[in-house]
Image (tube, rainbow, N blue to C red):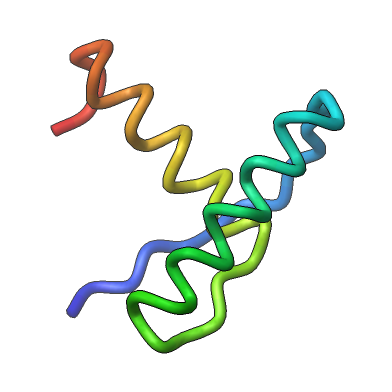
Length: 57
């Protein structure tokens, strides 16, 4: 499995967005049996958005 280098960025999110990402992290933890951080959930959300916009595959 190839590991990609992560870059640190600062992102401003609305409180409701943070709450929903934390809820999703907990759902992923229960389904997959491993801890998911808020940062990991932001990467998933951004990746999904970019894929839907045709910018990533």
